[in-house]
Length: 301
Image 1: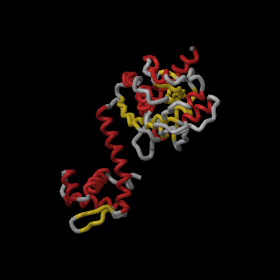
Image 2 (image 1 turned 120 degrees about the horizontal axis):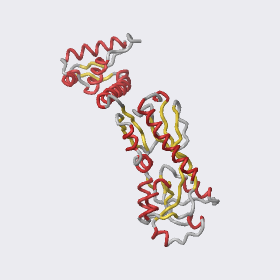
Image 3 (image 1 turned 120 degrees about the vertical axis):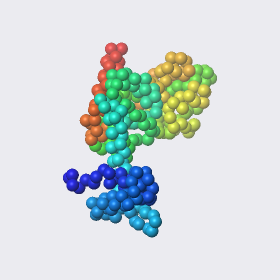
Image 4 (image 1 turned 90 degrees about the horizontal axis):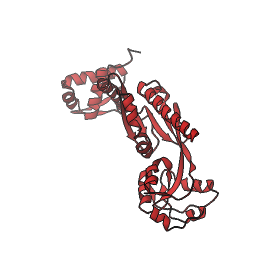
């Protein structure tokens, strides 16, 4: 196996030459001579038995095989560089690359994260925010917080919290609606979330009303929709954890007297290949403790 693995120095030279489309420019970047770059590229091609570049007079371009190889080698070298930097910065810790959903990340995770960092001073947490599902094959992530029940292959998950949702709007807007039934809510201006187009329909069904939900203003994030509801644009179906402070301060008012189970729950998901990554194990243990403590508090209340 060791004999089949190219030297890292050859791969770095290949990446630089591919990025620059020039052996001469790559030589300047690497503090080498143009001849040395050319020899290293030739050595890598002989090692692999594949032509990586097409030579055209004074310039070089990647061959189709070289372009495909660059995509994978670029990822591998990025991982090596990140791991090396992390080891230098935190020799007693490591780096956790965590994907988060914007609303859950800012309202639920962020207030709790300082405790994790205080307990694990050697660990650095890098957060990547995304609205769509994360791609562990194409993104350098150790884990991600995901909403829903998607069955991702080759992963494991830890259930965090079930989501309950409640219709809410500004107090002044609510005062002018005369809401006395679920039917009255269906007749009010409704705000929608782009990633959950069936949320209102599901909420009405749970509350005993089958209705064709009319279109309305649509948002890409809960936080933006909550702000719009607070300014009197309409009724928003919002997770309770998101608007706890707004309900307490009176910025938002609950339109209905009870919250309902949402269409899904939040989970921490990680590739099986990363299960033994030390920062991830520490994070799993810490967040499991928070979830268990919250469940115990709910059981006692």
